[in-house]
Image 1 (tube, helix red, strand yellow):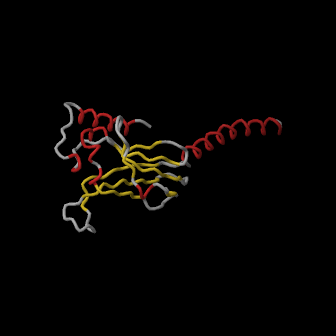
Image 2 (cartoon, rainbow, N blue to C red):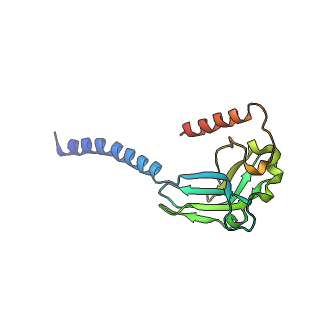
Image 3 (cartoon, helix red, strand yellow):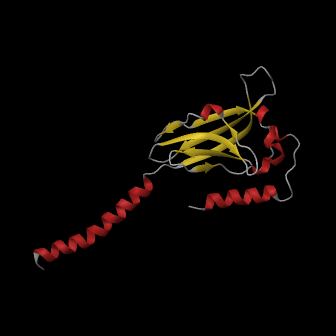
Amino acid sequence: MSPQEAQALIGAITGPLALMLSAVVYFRDRAIVSVRVGYNWMDIDSDKPERRTTIVVVTNAGRRAVHVSKVRLSARGATDFLFVQAMAGVTLGEGSEPFKAEAHQDNMNPLAPIWWRVRAAVTDSFGNALYSDWLTERPHWANESKAPTGAITWNRLKNWGRKRVF
């Protein structure tokens, strides 16, 4: 085997390996943002003993920094409920503390009749809307509003499907 053939063989082996490695690094080094919402948290700083808050937690589990803004509760056919403290947004880097936006549930009454269609939404720096899971339990602010038959089961199925898709 001549030196030119040996170099060609080495190039034929290492070229595709370098391509595979760069693809792995590209897909690994991205922002992975998760949005969770917690209802019925007690507000310990308030003067009212029964005042409850809703907290939206945004976490970056990826390697790239991402800027998130416009934290809101969203439902089709209804006006979004914006979290005012999150309007300016925040940049979440690798290993940074999760961003928490909270609001009192006193103002969420317009969403009460359709509470099973509500989920938290966040807009990131790329313009993507990132969503939390659909509700499977009636939050405190929904008062006595009942979900239609099968709506909670459908929400559980959609949440299960979201976790299975890559």
